[in-house]
Length: 261
Length: 326
Image (cartoon, rainbow over all chains, first blue to last red; front, side, top):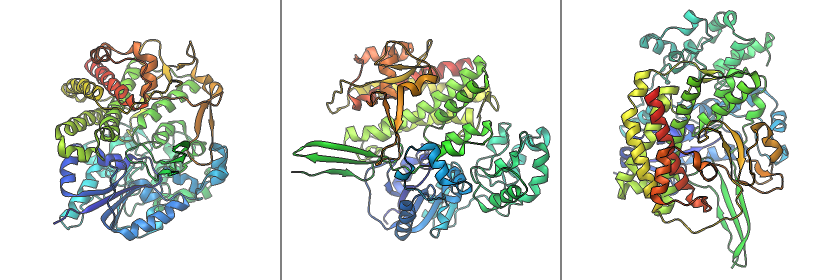
């Protein structure tokens, strides 16, 4: 039996999710024994032609070129996996979706007219059918490994869908929100990080995105009274996963109520 | 024959780029490096954010070197706010930075550059014929990532850095537990330098390089310092950087082009740091330079790999010292 072919691509992103694959130091050499990385520019020069069994795509769609390229990748891939928060929610660069892109461009570039960029940074699923979303900024590398293992075993990947809050309780972390009055998105954020920020004494900033069925509205009357600076709740929601609908809609409501957009 | 060279996507580099070389009568007429990495407008959307969000946001510029962006932004903000950090915080920042250098340098030396010099398309292919070399590389890299995780919670986009210091102190036992690995890593990085010195590098000498790096009065600078250039006698303050060096936006690339006021390019990174600041290296790195008879300055850009390997010795040695005294 030939090895399943995996293709890894980078869109608008920081390389961190692909690097998480290369950070599988203990597993990498075994992994290349059972799957073929047919396209992985960060790691290798050789590119094998498609079609591929799996395309792992890091990054958001933020340029006209990327909007075309994702369709081509989709047509070559049996399964398309969105890798990380840029690919699942547009990433930190999706903050442009709530601002004027041309104004942002003028702040950074001498000749914004040289640039080829869309007005928005959007998740892959707004452009093509996505078979699986792996959240995280960056992804948890063991979740990526689980996806590849599931593929080899022809089963569904087993990925947790509970909130960061539950991990904190299980790990016995002191609740930073209740005990210290620190704003924390743990109750409405998807797990995967291992409750990293609360374990360091700081609030969760939502980098794995909203947990399925997140009740973000309930958090607002809890977070507003303990803000350590004006609009902290709003800024937390408009952050790394701010374009994810559950966070976006509640932040939009706050904006209507007079929060600074 | 006028055959141009086009590389639409460079492999095994940090970031994304394309290379066009136009030939005329057999010689190079024009070179264009197109960094097509899409613009993300960080400087724009940092406006209006709370200052403690800045290190978390700037980290996302690059997943391979997030600590560099965290350290630059917290130091800039501390300067603006008049905040001084304690020696203990400074030492822990050095250790965190050493960890990133270890991870990034091991990746770059063995997995990005070396396959080209050895005639392999990747470290994954190299592993089929020289598994021990690649296993050593992976362990060298892993130790950096473990240290990043112990201090910062995770190796890519660690979460513990803030303006003023850290959200929490790492657990002493977890740092101490890495000492045997750091000792192994120091020896393995010495072996890396010896191995690197024997690689077959293409011949190329560039005589008119301007090397630019930060220089600190008391240490081999990776965290902070003044700006030193091979064109100047004395270093100058970071605040004056933009008087001496400029950025220009060119049509063919999304990366701004940096140059001095005369319009000439300059080079930063391990080659520049080693060439300018080698006297400040610790005894372990000094010893390995003498052992292989390395002549400085290095003016062959391919040999940046050797400079990186020497720095790997330096950061492993310093990480070991800091871990022992933490």
